[in-house]
Image (cartoon, rainbow, N blue to C red; front, side, top):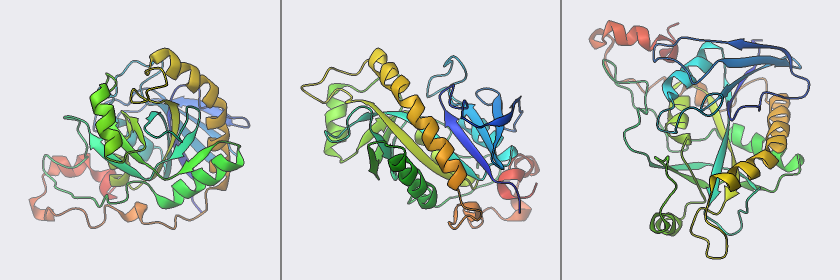
Length: 285
């Protein structure tokens, strides 16, 4: 049986998991440029964990500057099948308080101009994305979050904005009227690319604030977000460790074969350079 490889993307420091051995850094080149930073790999009771700080160490890249294609392709190059995304979010619901965890199941894209697909420039592919999160991964993340003692919410819609500015008060109120549950800046196009790459992607959304819609709470500030995140790092580590140890031997979902029927370009019409660039995504490498 091939070794299980679990990718984890989020803030720096999350690779400090108790019991992680054989830790090393790996720098990669991808057909889509350089990832945000070196990957950190390690072993946890027979499972390989691969970590990447989404914004680079020291938080050097804005959400719009992150090279999402290179990041996801790098995980694929390192053999990842499962992927846990750790994301700071603002709460759009009274019942989702700062410090709570939301295992989201839907996304609403409000980004502008981000490259959101491996396809294009010679090969056309249309991936199914009705349910953007892997149901198996998400259920597991919810279960282990509850076991770890988190106040966890199962399901929810994440509206992804361009940033790096936070929302205006008008925008925040409109998003709430649309029925979204949390707001963030990074899960798009990350989730789209993970699906194209055949990864079982799930998000642990860490609520840090009430955005700016809440009349009795202070408006969102970077200081408040960082303080809540510091408090949540230990919980995030517990969730990652528990999820990694409980991931099943076989993937019961269809994520791995999502790209199988996505390509509509006939083989004879494919640009050779594009085919080479997409070889790992198409399963030809």
